[in-house]
Image (cartoon, rainbow, N blue to C red):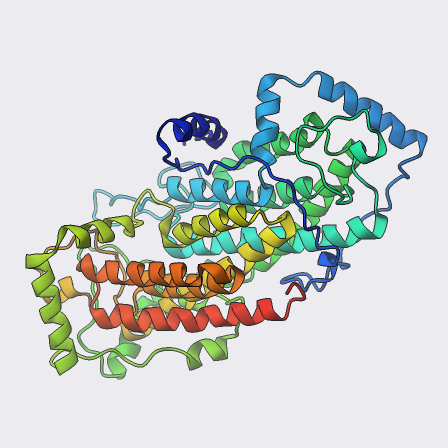
Length: 512
């Protein structure tokens, strides 16, 4: 793949923004001072790790020691040779490393969000994790895959930073510019202990998890991580031992997250050989008119067993208990009313409805609906100027809720195998592409309902805004002609309920 240098976008964007006040994809986030240190962050409840003390961090040498003074001397030498490009990188990475790595994850998701074309014999090739750069590239970063990728990244960052905060305030070694006033840093200063480096922790944890998820991008991710860590030296923010300790910690936490990911049942999500069992089960429940692929040749359904992946914020029993009731069957009054609405929309869709459908489409080549909400969260994080541990918590609560929404939604989709409007009436003109999986409930609606619920909790002054966005995202699928109204209305409420489990986690994690 051709890698996109998002740091180039950042600096080009500064010029563009000044000229016409439009924000490019890479967020325009100059560094800010972190005034709230969250001294108790090391005691917040972790998600995969037992607590912030599970992984130990070695005691650093004292700031007054000869060894530390030699590190200060080396730091000054490094700073004195920093190029203009190095200094630009300092500014780029200094605007919240947690946010930057989520930008990178969204970039990767968008670049890998392409379903493979069919073979000459009408079959479809399957991406191979053991040969990720061969066609079709691994992974196919569809919405469920992207939701899981963002969640694993966020949880790794969060658990690693809780552990880092525990060590920071236990050892309390301050930044080099606090110990030697001749060190003139290039970024806003604060009183946060510098050992281990939070940026090195985030760089290492993010690098390792994303290499696991996007194995064809290992050299690219290594390069980004190295640059991120080096900026802390070029900018005078850390000495080398701060960086080394942070990198080791980040790797250790990433290993725990990757071990979890290997047992989360994702490996069976695309078990096409068992798909007929789902069809037989639905038939036994009285659902005899079922969804089918409209692609030519018919494409296997997208991840029919993603609904069996392990959720983050509730268990499998709860997942089944909260599953929505069956949708109205063809011939019922509600079904016929919904179908009539689709036929009317196909003939009378307004320009505004087209716009909304297109804005929320998040189809091939995009970072998917989970990425849409991921970006909105990072915008709020920067607006509120959260420190890195609080940023990581926000992203962990949001992304685990979004993945849970995807899991529960897919479980519902393949339980009922409900048809889409175009399955009933092939003449319906849609405003967007038709996804290759069942209709009820709407994925956009469920993702958006969960995301809005969590963001309203974290950023209460944004509650009305995000809930209006979620409603628009849900209705966009009606306007697009690819979902019945019941799919979206039930999906939105379903998502809100799922988001509530993440909110409950947040209320009890010690960070309030």
